Image 1 (cartoon, rainbow, N blue to C red):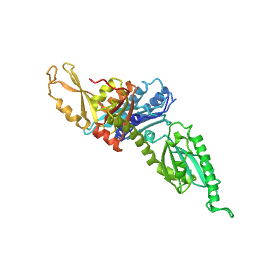
Image 2 (cartoon, one colour):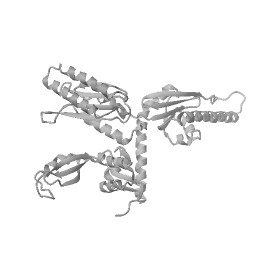
Image 3 (cartoon, helix red, strand yellow):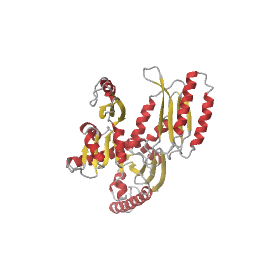
Image 4 (spheres, rainbow, N blue to C red):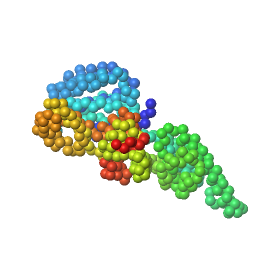
Length: 420
């Protein structure tokens, strides 16, 4: 099974981590538990049993009760798994003070990471230890680096923060000052031939190195002077790799030091990579809309209908969507209706239901039965119909357009929908 992380998985992880970052407990009442793939659940449950016994020595009655209650909750959650999921399992649990209420409530969060975790950790603290999951938000894809000038070239790969120099090539091309007795034109011609042959050699090494790499997100070419541009413009790279060139940048060196220079510039270049992907997705959507092909739609109701019909190929959701889907229910007659509310307005909406008559039985018994963020609501529908979900940032012009002009919800369709 592919461990490729989708923009939806990363969005979900980012969202839950930002929620957890604001949670604080009193003393050491918050439990963080990381269980790596392959670890036996029974082994972890036994460890927690011992921790429960140790917690009985805590002097403060409240802290002792809260820690032991949290341990029991974690054990219960663990027992729901026959075995550890293939990417591992993370559970955060503990007594969190409730806003302004002066009381505490045990909160539990179970996370199945988007890729394997390597750490086994149990910790009680005044905060949740999310840093090992934060690490997963960093870009992990593979990038290729080619540094080149007229004297030498270096080929390297970068995965996450792991840098590996694969090959160093010397050119054998003479400098620009000619040997005695040669005419300037002949010398220049010979030098040019040697340079072309050197570029071909470097191109072959680059093709051999980068073509077999799975999930190669892009290639960065660097070096001092104009040689790097001559190499990039020529036909030395396989066409598949040529399409992946993200940037051509200036570096003072073409050796390991030059690779480190690119490392410093890489985060900004890699961030742009995701933006480029997002722009391409949005441009496809805008093309379908602009050419009236019938293969794109937008707006909550239209996209919902298209998802229900199984017509959506790619669902586009803005990261900036702050909307909740609310199920309103009458406790007297069971009447239900769904509404879409801006998340900050949720409290006043709930207040407005008090004493409001039910449209069905007229009893003042309406209340909120269920809430779900709109992004999650749509993502679940998409998962049922095997639809790709792209969560688009608001950092690009196109991302802003999705949020502001198309209501943050759009779709590229598999087939045209029949006019109703």
